[in-house]
Amino acid sequence: MKIETKFKDIVEVKKSDILDFEQGLPGFQTDNNFVLIPIEGTDLSLLQSVQTSELAFIITDPFIFFKEYDFELSSIEQELLDINNEKEVFVQVILTVADPFEKTTANLKAPIIINTKNNKCKQVVLVDDRYRTKHLLIDALIGQEG
Picture 1 (cartoon, one colour):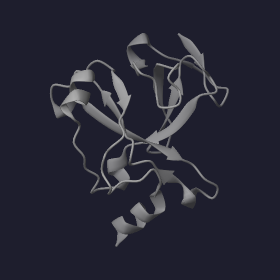
Picture 2 (cartoon, rainbow, N blue to C red):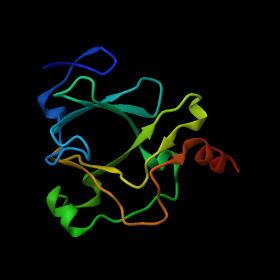
Picture 3 (cartoon, rainbow, N blue to C red):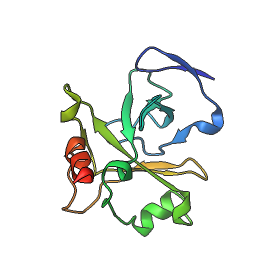
Picture 4 (tube, one colour):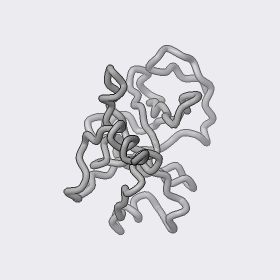
């Protein structure tokens, strides 16, 4: 099937690539189906709604930037997503892209959890004071160099 992205590109997606957010995303409960579109030459992807072309988020793998990032999913979330082992889990976080890019932040408080086996997904709000909704990517990169 073909969908239009937030950036007015038309992309072909396979039904097997559609991610199912049964409860939607916080604030966007009516959009349940999304696809991941890699952004060429970067570690970023576009999490694009299948239903609403204007709805998309820039996301990334938090472990690339934040090596110490760590959390546990509750048994309820594991059951909801039908997760049987951690190899089925793919974690992404939403970025707030800023101009200049050095001010771009990552939401480590509410990661997106994707079960790669069945494409069930959920944005989970962590009850962990170590994480906020705005962690500067540049701070993470500088910390890796030091």
